[in-house]
Amino acid sequence: MALALEAKGTMHLDQVMQPAIELADGFPMYEFLRNFFVSERAATEQWEWSKNTYYPNGHVPEVGEIFRQPNLARTLRAIAAADKTSFAKTRNRVTAIHAGRDTFYKGDIARRIADADKAAGGVFSYDDLASYHGAIEKPTTTSFHGYDVYKAGPWNQGPVLLQTLNILEGADLKSFGANSNEYIHQVHEAIKLAYADRNTYYGDPAFAKVPMTGLLSKAYAAERRALIGAQASLEQRAGDPFKFDPAVKAPASAYTPHSQGRKSGATAGDTTCVDVVDKDGNLFSATPSSGWLLSGAFIAGDTGVPLSNRMTVFDLDPLSPNVLAGGKRPRTTLTPTIVLKDGRPFLAISTPGGDSQDQQILNVLLQMIVFGKDIQDAIEAPRVNSLHPFGSFDTHPSEPGVLEIENRVPEEVRSALTARGHKLKVIGPYAMSTGVVAVGVDPVNGTLRGGADVRRERYIFGW
Image (cartoon, rainbow, N blue to C red; front, side, top):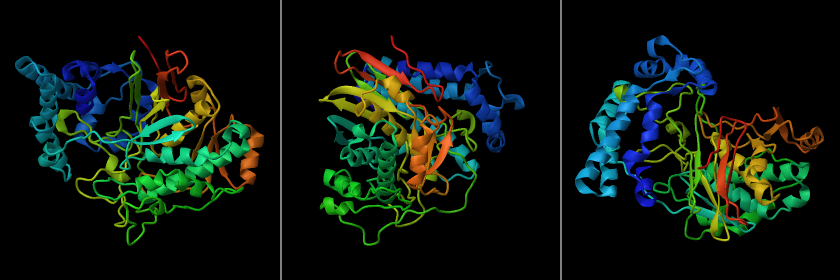
């Protein structure tokens, strides 16, 4: 975040951290969060500092009660103060941002985080924090019906959306009709094919050679599209992108995705998202997550900082490009999105939802781009989500052929999908576990617009 502020921002770290400090000082508890405080209490209270942070005096905060995190507020104030002090001395905004950032990664805060982790049996050290640096990386991208969609690289699941769009670009989705039998069939089959590639080939490119040129090739997409038949496939069908990417050599032993280990009973979640457009059309999309309360949050001592839960995303099979390794990034599900139209800003969009994030974004983008719906109408349209791919969390489970589908999709459509072999898991009218937020620029009038999901506590505002 400090790097983004340094490279693309205009404000000071001290300034942009003030709202976070205010929230750490206290905010009114709301029902959605309180329910998790109740359900995850036993898992969280195993850690002394987590217990003290989330259940002060053994109490679950009531809805409307001010919930305070004084230790976290103190940590955030130390970072902001370092930025402010440095700027007063140097009058250099970038130098000051570095000073604030280093207060977290290289100062006493980092030592206390590492000590708390070690005391609880953890394995990372102060040096792991002190040596960490983010980087600005080249995005992956594809075109879809005249729109350019930008995602993160293959250490992230983001390219799976691009692959799915490439496969669907050759299908006449508009003639099928929104959420028709044929439309949903084509979408579900494309998702299966793209996610099979995600699980087979994606990994941190600093450690794995990922054939991204091949994976995003339109010719490769055409080959994959030809696999879609009239009936639902129950197989995991990864392709051969190396044929379309001569710069990357296929590994001697291919990895076949599979479930791993014993189910822990852990639940992944607690992601949020932030999407912004400003008066100049600049787009920003982020999907902050980890350190979640679900299955128990670990608070690093008196710093108030919750540590990440993302190592569960790693594979333990040595053939996997996503196998666990020191210094390696797990193939995260966090997947913000930027869309341009004719080279101009069009949309920033993201959502919570783990493996479903790119599927939910796909649902909305197709409603907008193929069927011409406004942002809010596209977000509120009935949704589907495949459970067929091997999941990113816990044992990496798969439910072959299973498709979650909201019951606002007509019963006759659902019956037709079942007849084609899709295994439907019918859920309530706005029950998909998602929370899409999207903002952008109207390409005709140049005005700003946006929409927010009614399925979770999402909102949009402008000033």
